[in-house]
Image (cartoon, rainbow, N blue to C red; front, side, top):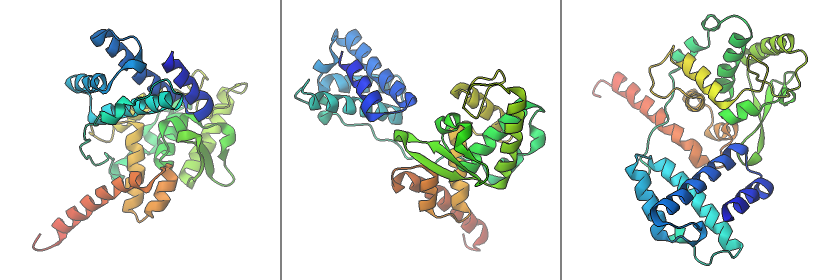
Length: 294
């Protein structure tokens, strides 16, 4: 089956992360099910641009956001490029498909005062879970790393002497990120609690559940949502919001945008420049408040 061959290619040759591969797989099988149901077409490689356009229309009717649809179309583009390269098909149906426009939205972030309130020690329960939860939030805000990067950190990746951590980002790119003394002290406290609670653990992952297994995505989402709910009324309360918060606060406090790009692990500056819009909005508010004729 072309889909399984393509997924194998992504795993062995492109070496994409498990999370990325799962997304590709879900998109392709969802499209295949659509073809089977709507057009009785069992071979995805036989589809034309008409079928893809119908899928886009179907996704829009079912209230999928333009960003989500574009990601799915990007999956199909990669898939059909693979089929052409391997001479499975001759024509690429994606060349005649126009992706829906994504409305520009400023990244959602938490104000600095709210983040300071969030990271107060008395907000967290005593014991291992409280120390771990505080470390999760401090790690996300202190470094701006992605959720998948946080979960992937192993004990050996943390250099306590140099106050830096090695993370594995998108496309399996490694980068070193420095952190401050606040995170260092919490990290030391957590490692001590981890060693005391799980002295014989076989897991290399730094962050563990209360039962001693590696932390997983849904649990981190629940933890972040729980604590952000105590300090903000934002509708979105996810680890990625803290990543946006990190970048916005760094920029607002004078950090160079190229340095922020490296810390976030962005492949291009364009992805980082979105945070400058938040800074401009802040300047507008200051101007309106301060200028006598504003």
